[in-house]
Length: 517
Image (cartoon, rainbow, N blue to C red; front, top):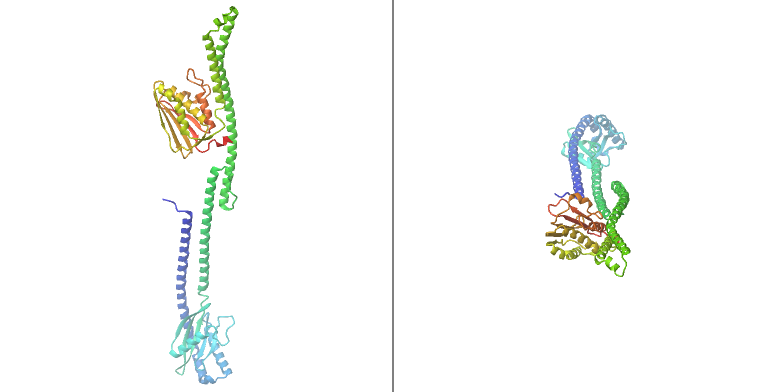
């Protein structure tokens, strides 16, 4: 199952957080609303109780005032109004003091005026005659209803920035309704709903912004990760590439990658120096073997030539005459000297090839054409030895940067050795394979001959090492040098049940292009 992308994960996380926040907000609002209803019920009962007690406490005073003043209320003077207000205010302050947060007073329908306002538990400035101006109309409308309906009323009113239960109770004088008592209690301090709503709005907005920021950060993170992936791919092709300096965690990662690449480059530089030193030592060792081999190979022909010339010289001293030279320097002895000289000349040619195995000019070449040309050159000998040659070419093999003559020489040397091992007939198979993963081409040469003993496997590429009676021991050495010059590899696979298997590996993409410069 495919793993979700980073963007999908970020969106899922954002949606999850949004659902959680919205659920929390809804749950909180429901609980706040439920709590609000409970508080309003309690405060409404509390307010009504205060109105009842205030009405009972003021009834004697109302009866007295009615008998002396209120029955002619429309014609009351200002002083009489003040007297009524003062008498009732004392009662209101005394009894409302027992109810924290409640304010209230009296209303008289005859004359349509309020009196006796008090808010004893509040220390801040209060209206002189009450009720408060902002709530005046609501209170006035409700006391009028109470007088008209002659019953208690409890309502909950909401104004901007305030919420309050309002209780009204009718008051009587001589059996008639003459007005009402009103009490109210502001509960916004007990119901911080507006503040909570603002807080929740802020939380919601902050959560939304947080989600957007999270999505943006995840997108930016994904973009930076993609940049790192592209950079690593570029670094695989270009050792000189370095990540630009960045801040944050990803900057630390790219910085660590740069440091690692620098350390690896330093290690590779040291490794190359060590390899060059080892190659130089190997060359010196090979040179020593080469000198020893040349001395051994040259010694025998030179000794033969010297012996023959000394023999001629001796015989010439003993014999004098016009026909003496013809008798001493015979055709057979001259043929022998020429044969040894040819042997030395062939050795020198092989040494020249060994010293410079490939040309300095590589060019795009068709490997299959090179293989086919090499096999054509050995076809006649294969027919004489009753050896069947079969090929299998991989059509995916691309054009390679080669020295065609050098690779042809490698194939000739390997195939010639294979034919030498099949004296009584056999089969020679040549196969090419392209390996895209390693970006290389492998040429396999399989024979059914006597094979190669594992005991001599480590020496088959040494100069002048041979198991043939008349061999010079330079064929596989030359092949090895040519393949190495192509940045490739040549090896024999052991053990084989029948014959031997040689594999030549060549790079498919510009393996030696740098040597052309």
